[in-house]
Length: 186
Image (cartoon, rainbow, N blue to C red):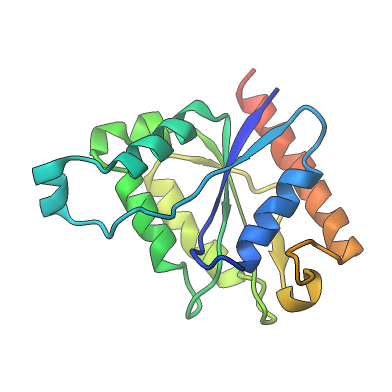
């Protein structure tokens, strides 16, 4: 059974991207486990802190979860037409020390999705992640795109996805990504 870990790139408790991640875990195909990870508690990257204290426990725990997973689902907000700083910061910590990059990211199947209240659907943020994913040596899945616009009309007040068309698109996306993950781990 493929095991996918998902990370929402927002710290906001009522984050639309955290809602999208939960929805993705619910519509994943039978036999696919989607664990919801968290970047909460990861400090700002500081090389002096790394040199003096090492890698923070929150980072070490998340690195271990990603390394143990068969695939990584990044659920990215779009801030100022690009990637969110908190998620980029988490990825920067996760790539430390550089000797661990291959263990955590190397060849790992990755998909990027996202949602926004606006009309762009995180297209620019998803594109901005590509050089980062390439540098880390991941295996991005390009078999589908999942960008959700008008997030405030897609989720209800309890964070549940209410738009059936979007839910079906998400299920198709997750089916394709899960198949890609399975193929990479045969």
